Each structure stands twice: as C-alpha cells, then as structure tokens.
Length: 235
Image 1 (spheres, rainbow, N blue to C red):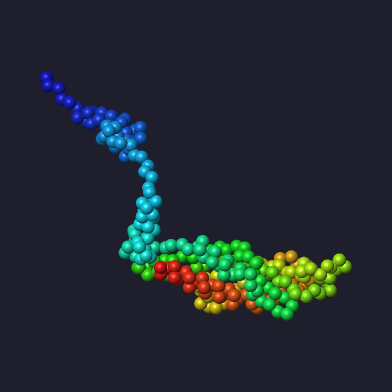
Image 2 (cartoon, one colour):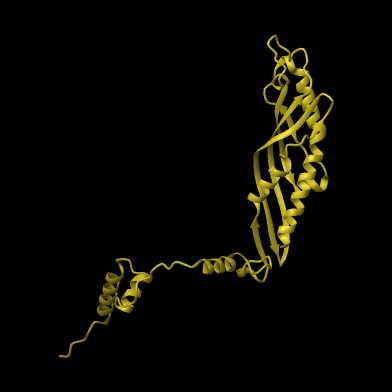
C-alpha cells in the first residue's frame, strides 16, 4: 500500500527549522552572513581626509550658498537656528562699557547680560528666508554718583574713588523680539539689588535714570540684531 506524505507536517517542520535558525538574532546581519557564508569582508570604519570631510560637511549643511540644505533643494520648508550667535551679539551690543545715561551727579551703564533665554531662527519657506528672534533678558547695571554726599563721607575717608556711592541693580526684559522692535515699545522691570535706608534717594534716582534711558538703547540693539540676522538669512 502506497504511503502518503503529510505535507502539512513537512511544512510545519520547515517552519520550525527556519524559526530555530533565525531565533538567535535573525536580522540583516544574520542573513548577510548566511548569504555570503562568511566570505563577505567585515565592515570597517574609514577615516576621511580633511578635504573629504569638508566636502561632506558642505553637502550636508548647504548647497553652495543657496541658503538651502542639499536635501531640500525644492525649498519647501527648513529651519535653521542662529541662537548662539544672537546671544553673543545681544551681549556685545548692550554691554559696551559706555554710559546709557549721564547727568551732573550720576553715570549709569549696563554691566552684564546675566541671562539670555530664547531663540533666533531662519526659516526657509518655498525658497524664501524668513528670520526672527524672541528672547527674554536679565541685565545688570551700575549707577555711580560723581559727588560725595554727607552719607558717603566717613571719618577715615581718604578721598579715593571707592568713597563714591555705587548703586547696583537688575533689569528684566520679558520680550526682545521683532514684534517689540516694530511696535517700538519695550517693557522692562528695573530694581536695586541691595536696598539701604540711608541711600534711598540715590537708589530712586538710579532707577529713574535707567527707566528713562534704557528703552532707546534696547531698541537700537534689537534693530542691529534684526538687520544682521536678515543678512545671515539671505547669505
């Protein structure tokens, strides 16, 4: 009597064997090794020359000055960040060492851009660059009074500059952006860091000088930043 092979059983056996072969990590590398029976050379890292590295960087980052990355030659959408550059420029434009206000009795200058948070970007939309920035700033200032008052003079006063009163304070600017620049209106809060009862009048004068003089300084800095960012977007 002729025997009949059970095809279903054979299929199950083959599936089981296949499962056993691939269960130990069957993937691209497994099948690659199986196909080449170990004859394919192992992949090894290759060090690029400086010229090759520069060419690859240019290919990845741009397309020869068009403003678009090589993968986006159609120019549909692309965003690039210029935040680090903008943070540095804001500090350079505001902290110059020059007085932002000076009267017969006092001189005010910004001493640091203590904190800068936000971003500056260039967005390519259908091949056209659109730039923008939006930051919040924390600045520090000093107001140095040119003449000594009775409260500044002590018995051991030697007449040196250290005897002149210096008021230190902080300015917080919640928004530094193109919108602020277009509106020509900058909101900020100014206050003295360490208040002392005996110099209250000088502290009030220092804050008043900052409030009267700072806005045009900020608008001028934001205008320069905006113009330079536009040039970077178009280059």
